[in-house]
Structures are given as C-alpha cells and as structure tokens.
Length: 177
Length: 220
Image 1 (cartoon, rainbow over the protein chains, first blue to last red):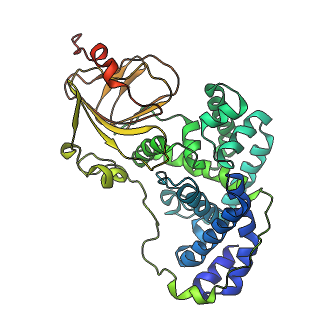
Image 2 (image 1 turned 180 degrees about the vertical axis):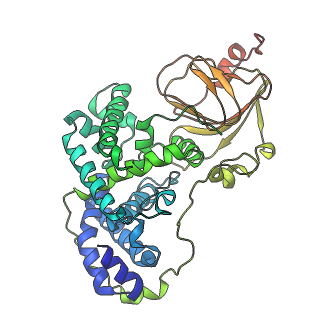
Image 3 (image 1 turned 90 degrees about the vertical axis):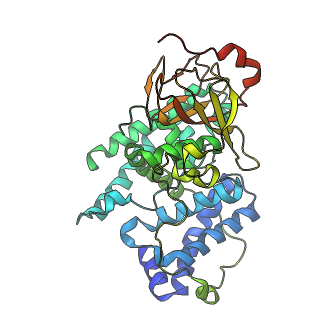
C-alpha cells in the first residue's frame, strides 16, 4: 500500500489512486456505517477520506507508519468533524510518534509488523465481554455512558472492561517497546 | 513538571477511538499535550483502532471512483507535515495551546467571571450538539472547589497551583478523573490557589449549593 501512496505522491499517479480507492473506500464506508452514518453519507465520507489521501499524499512518507494507519486516522478525524460535528480535540499521531521515529532503527519496519501481529492476536484472544466494549468504542463510536446503556451495565464495569482489555494488549507488545 | 495523576487508561482509549464526549476530550487533549507518558499509550491504542478497522468487512460502493487527474492541480504542496492542530503543552502564559483560540494565551488575562467568593470561571463554548460543559476555574488560596457531590463524570486538569483532596495532591499537569458519585472536597493550595480546566457531564448547579460549599477554608 505504501508503494501506491508513494506513486500518488511522486507522480500524481491516478491509476495508483484508483487501486488504493478500490481497497480502502469500501472499508471506510463500512466504518462510517458502523459509526451510524446512512449508506449515502457513509459513501460520501469514504470518498472524502480518499480525496484527502490524494491531496495529501505528498505529505506521506513510508516511514511514518503504514498506509492503513494513515487512512484510518483521516477517517476517524473526518467522522468526529462531519458525523458528530464536533471539534477534534485529540489529534492522533499519523503513524509512529515523532519522538520514536526521530531515530529510525534498521529493523523498525519489521518491528511495526510484529507489533501489528501481536495486537491482532491479543485482540482475538480477549474475553468476549472485553472485546465487545472495545469494538463499541472504536468502531461504533459510543461513549462509555452509551456503552453502559446499550449493554445495561454499570458505567464502572464498562470502564474496567476497557482497561483490562488494554492492559492485555499492552502486555502482549511490552517487550517490543 | 512531574505528573503524578494520569487520566484512566479507558479514557485515553476513548480519545483514541474518537468517542470521548467533546468537553472531556478537550481536557484529555490538554493533558496529553503535557504528558509524554499518555502520548506513548495513545500510539499503541491507535494500533488497536487500526487493527479493528482493518478487520471490517468492506461495504461496496454504489458510486464510481472519482476521476482524479483533474484534481491534481489542487494538490497540497509540501509545507507542514502535521495537518490540523497538534497539542504541545502550555503557552508561556500557562494556557493549553489548544485552548488559545477560545480563551487567549495567558491565564492571567482570561476574562474571569465571578461565580462565588474566591471562585471565578470562564466557560468555553462547545459545538452546538455537544453535551456537558467545559470551563476554566480559578480558585483562591485555601478555598474549597465547588460542585463536588457530583452527578455524573467530571474530569479536572490542573493548569496552575495545586489542590488537595482525599485522593491526594494534584499539581500542574495532573488529572483528577472522577466518573462516579464520589464525594470529595478538593481544597485549593493554601498559598497559590489553583487554576483548573474542568469538564463535567452535568450542568454545574452552583447557585443552589453556593452557600453550603463556599465556606472559606480555615483549617490550615
């Protein structure tokens, strides 16, 4: 994917954009629908996400994290801005933190891959009740109070499930830091 | 600045997910700008979001892929690699950088409004649909901080001075993360007082409780 982005960035390669669009736009659309957008709005937001990628491709550099991370970040911000019509107070690092990538290690790319693999595995191994609250937060965009309401749980239970889920995932990658 | 009290990890996750109610996200973002520890956690939390996003079943598009060649002319060129605002701590005047456009860049020049003896505030407007509220709160030395048998969540970040309650001492950069019905009675630093940024879920009900809560702190 990074290769597509580099071709878009350096050559304005419309064919590369087309490939990228075919891969990512349907996924962004699915994300927006899970976040509560109707199909037409979700599709518009998917288009807008990918158009942002097109416009900003020259700001992307392969060592700042992978294309999926970057596209997801754009989609997440667009959702807050357009779907919730709120200010995006907490900006996310687009890729790795600058403090971390100032000093790129030769095997950093391998390490990123390894971390993704472990996060994936740790997520898959979460107890169902913990996995559920994480998905409701990240994919359905619910606040803790809304999750508590949806699942008919005390707010404190939702919060402790989120925390436990994170601690397990963090433990799974601890030695990579 | 040594930060002793961080917000709950679950609240950082909610920020990473983009699911934090706006007033709370503003307090979190102000803290994150001051706190490298929480910034590191956010990096990993972001990986969780990316992973979940990657595993979504794609939803086919009804429309066509836009033709891009036409638009290339409007491509953005070079420049700043960080789009949007990125929080990086406090201004020289003690204001979280991300709040400058709402409240100016110096705590000393905020247009404080008197709320009660020894207590001033400056409400910060949120987006039209946002619930809860966000304000700067300035408490005179030794005063009790009001509105604390709270109903609903509350998140407080210290910007200047300190306060103390049953759970400890909160200095600059520290976050008091109260989501339940905890009864607590924070008291501003007996010498320097305290300036905080406070998000709360429910409207403050100062007027009705002012008389009860605002006795000057005389215990020291």
